[in-house]
Image (cartoon, rainbow, N blue to C red; front, side):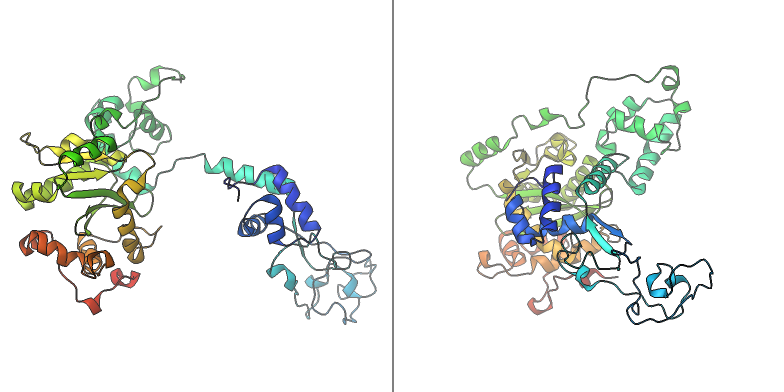
Length: 431
């Protein structure tokens, strides 16, 4: 099968020709080297409906068009049709009019391109036209790449941080450099938001902005400082584990619901398959730091260092400040952070697999905004009480309790759920 998801114009022309030859979707898929479901979606997405008649007969989709004997229902002396069934306007004047739709259009191939009754049919027809499909595709592609990909909640959050500082005379660059863990946007992005009047602060509040003409900038500013990964790559992680083979590993990741909404931070203990989940209002570096500070305060130094000696995570921008995670406020090391290689989620496959249990309760694409931390604790209690074959049918809660004690579980608000009371379904968190 083709690895490219988008149809080209030549493929669409071939598709139109094969539909006219009444080929099946499977036959078309073999010809275009695509899955038959891709062919079906392409045809249904770009259908064109036409109200055309047949040779010598106008469009008429009345159910009684073959047996109707009414004449001159429109009461117009200029009507040239003796019988109303030969008129395309009978539907607006006849009380007995009932619409009839072609039953062949509700199943594959959904179009009339190759229909044998096309020349004699007077019903509404559907066609697939390659040129029109290509034009609509290019329009949708262009519109999807324009505009701002951020929701109102995120704009409101940024506005509450940035606008008061702008009114105090601070520049956007100064604001970004001193609040990078909270804002998580580049200077250019914030300037664009101000230009689009998304903030309560305006261009007039930026003294230098109104003095200069718009000009091009060749420099591209990256939000994530890649130097933070020096000495913390996956290769460094493997070398560290060779030197300390008995060190427990914790895998860290984020779970998004809807873009710009609340986000989960997940911490997965590899030895026990036990997972913690913390809800955050925004996917920022500061929100991750705040969770680590809270855990460090609740567990105390010895327990925290015993639970989190090594943390393996991905290259997300929310993990771009490893020093704030590795060291406490007094400068004492409390953990070691390492990063997976780019585009290599399999290097922390355990936490990725465990996310499937979260998706059973909060399906992908659903918003985390209605939930609070108590809801997430309830969800994780059910997930951690679920037996695993890898653990000889024991639950992660039981194994974690054996390794670290019940006192630690109480500090983490973890409670064991009876086996027959476990719910891994969206109804668990229904309000």
